[in-house]
Image (tube, rainbow, N blue to C red; front, side, top):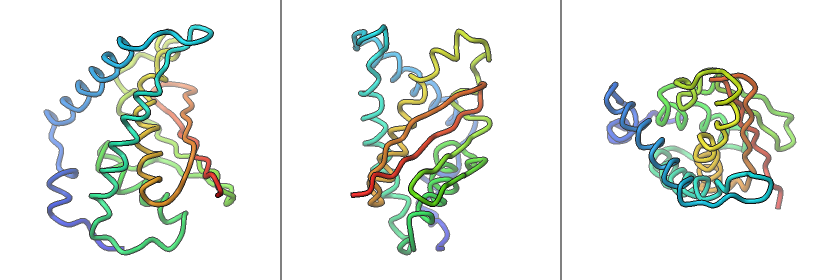
Length: 173
C-alpha cells in the first residue's frame, strides 16, 4: 500500500497534547449538547441516533480524504485492516489492538485503552453512561465503511473500562 502523503499527515497525523485535549473536550461538548436536546425514549433509554449520524458524516468525509491517494483495496478484509491501522491512528493516535473475523462478514475490533473512555472511572455508574460516548465512534466506523462501499451495522460493547469492542456486521446486498 502507498504511504500517507505529507498533506494527510498534516491534517490527521501529528497531534500534540493540546490537540488531543481539544478533541476530547469537543467530543464531550457535542455529546452533552445532543443529549441535552434529546428526549427520553422508551424504557428510559436516550436517543443517541443524532450522535451516530454526526459520526457517520464525519467518518464518510475523513476516509475520503485519507484514501484519496491510496491504491484500490483488494477485498473487504483489506478495507477493515486499513480502518484498524491508518484510520484509527489518524483519529485516536493508536491502532486497534485486536481484529477478529469469522470470514463471513462479522468483524470485532478491540481497543484495550480507548481514548474517549480512558479518563472515566471503572465503576458501574460510568459503565451505564458510556454508550453515549461510543455512539459517535460507531457512526465514524459506519460512515467510513459506507464510503468504502461496505454497508454495515456497528455496535459497541464494553465489559470493563477503558476497553471496548466494536462489532461490525456487513450487510450483504
